[in-house]
Length: 76
Image (tube, rainbow, N blue to C red; front, side, top):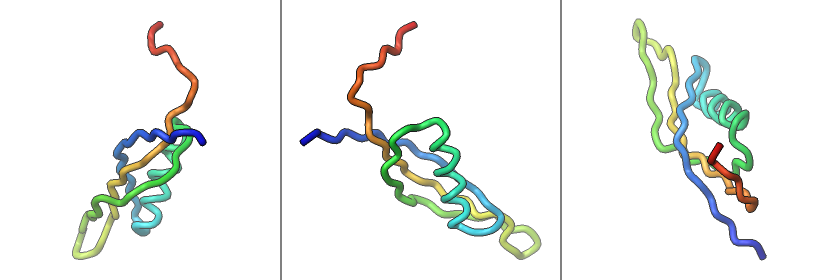
């Protein structure tokens, strides 16, 4: 059995439509540059109000992804 080691980052997604769309937006964007995303946790939900109506939903997520087993050099 392989040990699983994860890294956490925070990302913020926004949407004029819904909290769910804000989450999908954040995960879709993060998935373009981060491999092996395994889970997320909503840690904060806020919104913007304009003229007495919700204009935007904003969601802060903790995103967990597994680290690769291969060593990658960070030096040029």
